[in-house]
Amino acid sequence: MFIVSNFLIAIAKIIDIGLSLYMWLIIIRAIISWVNPDPYNTLVRFLHAATEPILYPIRKRLPLFFGGFDFSPVVVIMAIFFIQTFFVQSLLQIAVRMAQ
Image (cartoon, rainbow, N blue to C red; front, side):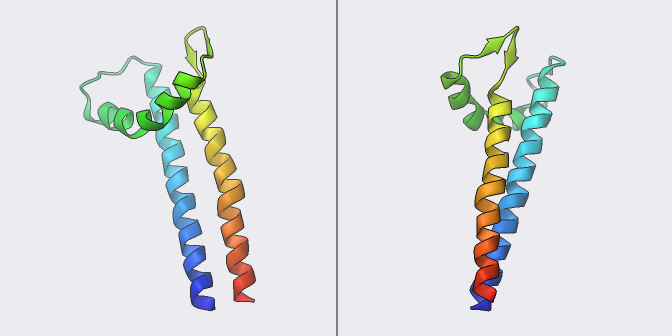
């Protein structure tokens, strides 16, 4: 049973790292959007391509624009925190209980 437990721990850690990296991509995109970036820059295009599939549906359903401020990155970051706190921690606890 320890093999399944170790597998679940590895999956939980990979998901946690992936979510953290995605959160940083969203934060970097939000910061870069404040300085009017060059749309042909490779980094800007990558950030847009990596984050827009998640941000666009939220932006479409969340018509909250106060003074040009887009709240969709805040919603996505809160969702990432929720997933990390609930799902990843639940996987880790299941794995620990399986190892006992």
